[in-house]
Image 1 (cartoon, rainbow, N blue to C red):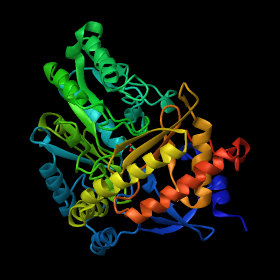
Image 2 (cartoon, rainbow, N blue to C red; image 1 turned 45 degrees about the horizontal axis):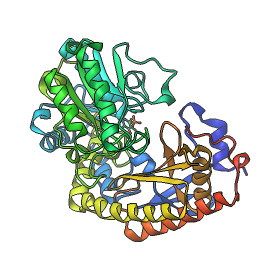
Image 3 (tube, rainbow, N blue to C red; image 1 turned 135 degrees about the horizontal axis):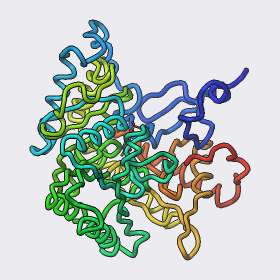
Image 4 (cartoon, rainbow, N blue to C red; image 1 turned 30 degrees about the vertical axis):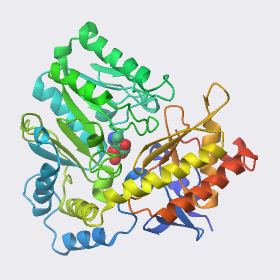
Length: 437
Ligand SMILES: *Cc1c(COP(=O)(O)O)cnc(C)c1O
C-alpha cells in the first residue's frame, strides 16, 4: 500500500509545499493531530498559527453547520448577508477609532494585504510603499510586491518599494543600537533619499514572524508611527499571524503603543476556514466599487466561522490563556537554552514564540541543526517548523487552547530532539528532500 505522504508527492504540486518532514495527518482534536501511522502528534505550529482555537473546535463546527443548513448563497459581491455584515460590524468595534471606516473581507492574509496595497496607492495617489527586510505579507504577486522575505526574491517587488531593516537586538548589538539602525534608515529615506510625499503607506508586522519571530525594542514602533504621521503615511499593521489573542492581548499592536490606520487579519480568523479582513478608514477602504473582489470573498460559511472564532476567543478567555501558557512555555524554553548551547535566544510574546539556534562564538546561524531538530521532533511526536531569513528560528504558534501540561509535554520532546541531534542520531542525509525554506 502506498502511504499518504507518497500519494501526496505523486499527485500534488510541489509549488505549494513547504515541507520539513514527511507529515501526513488524518484528523485532529484540540492541540493534537492524528498521524496516518496512528500516532498522536502534539501540534506546536497550529498550521502556522491558523488554528487558533485548536483542531475540530465544536463552536466552528456548529457555526458552519448552521450556515449550511440554510445557505445564504456563497458570495457577498451582489448580496448583503447576515454573517458578513455581523462580522464587519464586530471587527469595526475591535479596532482603533482611526481604522474604523470599512471592512474588506477576503480569503487569506495574502489577498487582504494585496488589496490594501492596491487601495492605499489608488486612494492617496501616491506611488511608494515602505516595508521591512524579512517581512512576509503573503504569497500572491501583489502581496509579495510589498514583502521583504528573501524566500520570495525571485518575484518582482513593487517598483516603489523601499525596505528598511527590522530591528534585531540579538544580532545588532542590543535594543538601542538595533532600533537606531532601523530608524536611521527610515529617517534617511524620508529626509530625501526618496520623495516622502510619494509614500502612501508603511506595512509592518508587530512581531516579524516569518523573518525570525523578531520583537522590536520598546518604543521603536511609536517612533515609526511619529515619522509616518509627520509625512501623511498610512500605517498598515499586519496582524495575520500574531493577532486575535495570540500574544496575550487581542491585537499585537497593543503591545507597541501605536494606533494603526489599517489593520489586517487572517489565518486564525477563520478557525481553519479561509477568511481574512482588512479594516481601515473610509477614504481608503471604501475607495471604489468593484475594485478588488473574488467570488467567494466573505461567503456566509467562512464569515460564520469567523464570528464563532471571535466569540470563542472572548468566551473561553483564550487571550488570557495565551498570556499565561505562553509565559510558562517561554520560561521552559529558556530553561532548555541553559542546557542546549545551540539555543542562542528565546523571544516573543504570549503564544508567538521563537528560539534562534546558533553555533560557535560568532553565533553563526545553526540552520542544519534547526532542520534536524524539527525533523527529529516530528519523529518523537511534536510538530513545529522553523522561520527566519537564515532558517534557524524554531517557531511556536500552537493553538491558543494549549494547556500548561501540553506545553511541558512539548518541551520534553524538544529537549530530547535537541539532545538526539547533538548526539548525531540523525544527520543531513536523513532529511534530503526536506529543505523547508
Ligand atoms: C501567513 C501570513 C500572511 C499571508 O497569509 P496567507 O493566509 O498565507 O495568505 C500575511 N502576513 C503575515 C504576517 C503572515 O504570517
